[in-house]
Length: 269
Image 1 (cartoon, helix red, strand yellow):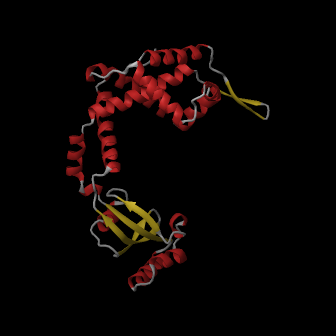
Image 2 (cartoon, helix red, strand yellow):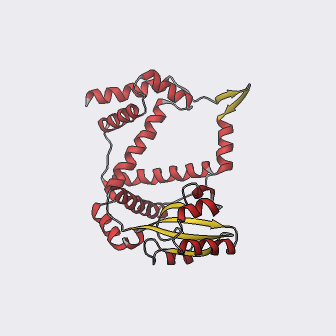
Image 3 (tube, helix red, strand yellow):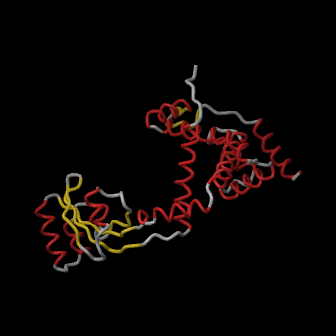
């Protein structure tokens, strides 16, 4: 414990000697500054997203005491050390170079790292295993996936011709390679991957999830093109680790939105 506290103190001491740098890099004699990055971030929406994340972190901090959550110096030291090992930043000189190149101090890096740990602890507290299991029970049908292949044609006549040939047992993948105008799937024989309910237009979605394996469906009018589908596989949802994480993400996001909605916001003066 004492050693952990000493190491954290040393990290903070390193931060004192570092200062935020204004110029990030020089390209062909022109400086790219923090101000340049700010303007670009605002223009592209990245800045707004960052503000939203900061709002989330702030309201979560307010909930920590209510939830009985604390972060000890030992916890923070161990988490920060693990993060540095994972990133290949164990050596002090490597860590300093990382901070310098990103225009931050060690203290700022440590503060962000503490927020990451806080987020994990709060999430584990507010999302219970029983809540995940109950959500899965109520939404299992919606989490079922269908693996699809698709052929996209520019006109209805071409799509009808492809459909007739597919129904006559011609290879769907070969037809896709020959006739599909969808570059992203054509080279893969039309394979689109697994989809869930709601990922396709409603008229297509309804037919897809009522079909059987190997069934040919279409043509459908979608976004200015005609599409023909083949059902490659139907996979019932299972409560494995990936699905548990997905549900936990949804439940935590819902909790966070409720907390944000209950917070008081004021315009900056």
